[in-house]
Image 1 (cartoon, rainbow, N blue to C red):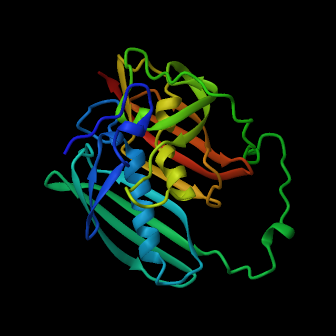
Image 2 (image 1 turned 60 degrees about the vertical axis):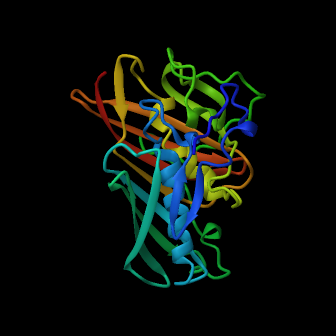
Length: 287
């Protein structure tokens, strides 16, 4: 089975979703998951969103008020655009705090591991901590999480210089508020997935956010795409709340080290304000 995402970015005649369900936690990755480095390898965003979705489903029987507060994804090698199988374990069950883990197997090996910390979102009862907290900010300290800029009008979809597009890139609509795939340095961008995560299932706010979080190093790259690789072997997203609406804003910055290790960090927001923070270690090498 093959699918294509049109170069125009109109996913209407392309794949039905990032993944097609095959039953029993098995999924077929479509070409909408293809990353920019190799058409046979997935972008990390769809895998992160799929892990979050499956872990959230498996956490629900522990307590209806558990909510995903942190997702860490370790990519153990190239993620194959192929049939995948997920296996879930619960190292730390609990009603107030729980840890769940899922492995993603494909191409005859374990391709990724995801760990999700879930926290009881109702622990404060009706006495909201927001009503009691204070957020003073002193010079030299970390500033508060930023409110995103307004959503711009529709923009031409441009990718890395020398690359007309790739499956995942076309499956998301990008509206930059600063920077761009084809510009070096920090960037901010409103993102809207054009497809469901899994065919036949509604796209949740959590999935929207995690579909785009792993794009942070791509939008904020400091080096030429054609000459350098800057690949994240892992992604960690700490989640304040699930975003609302169709759009998620991603603001990201890459910091280069003196050797082949880099760091990308960023913030995620919706129209109401901040929803999470992310970090990625980077392998940086010549192509």
